[in-house]
Image (cartoon, rainbow, N blue to C red):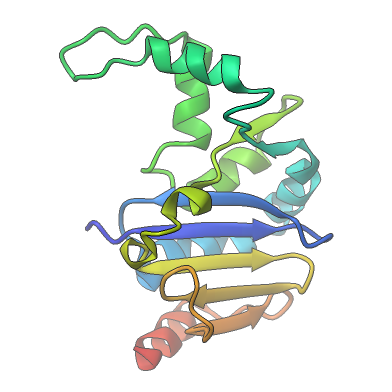
Length: 180
């Protein structure tokens, strides 16, 4: 179901490192549970934290302009046009940028073996259209919290959990359903 969502990750210094847009299944019982399961996997969580230093948002007008221009020139404008992207370009898009990823980007980043990961700051693209984001999921390593909100700028959280004391899937869904 088309329930738009945003997965945000803040590192231990308080810097936003991930802002991944998701097009589908953004309800707590979908993307929310996926993130909860990810956070409960200590090995993946440590790998994600270890790879945070490799993350960088694309600089569209600066250092990454040539990369973006090259990528865009090879993308088909319509489904009947040929896709001229290299396999590396297709892999980058499908593993770190695609709207179908949502919380799955966390696992992709955790398992990445390369030097640098360029990400799209989807939060910046959603500004001015916050109403289209139905759920926001914030993993905050600085404050050691996992927060669930409606939209991007909600002051009140639907749910907030310490990373060291996460609820069961059943309790998580039940608590969030009660909030709504």
